[in-house]
Length: 113
Image (tube, rainbow, N blue to C red; front, side):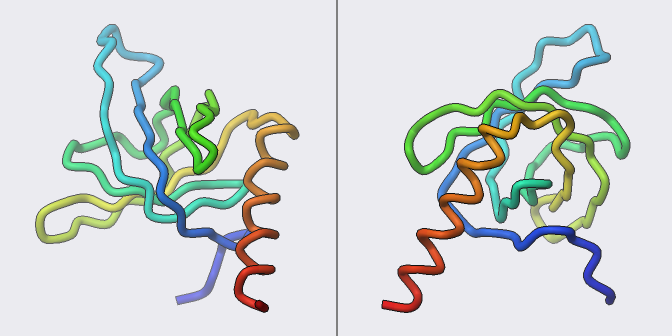
């Protein structure tokens, strides 16, 4: 399979709470973040999310800071007990993208030590 990601994905302990924008429901969907880059995110979830849908997300990162963002669901893979999704960020601020990039730099520096 050809790699289509524009940026390297990072693994981190993060949490994501999502809610769909165009639905009348204000349901919060907890997911487990699998990997992250400044352009997108991979996560697993027990609920079915719609391909192409835009969700509002609260991404709690390693600093315990919450990044408010929007994600567009672009990939779905059904696994045994869960569904793994891929999503791209929509309108992520440069400041928030830099926070993700800085984490990558620390991870790379730690590997060289």
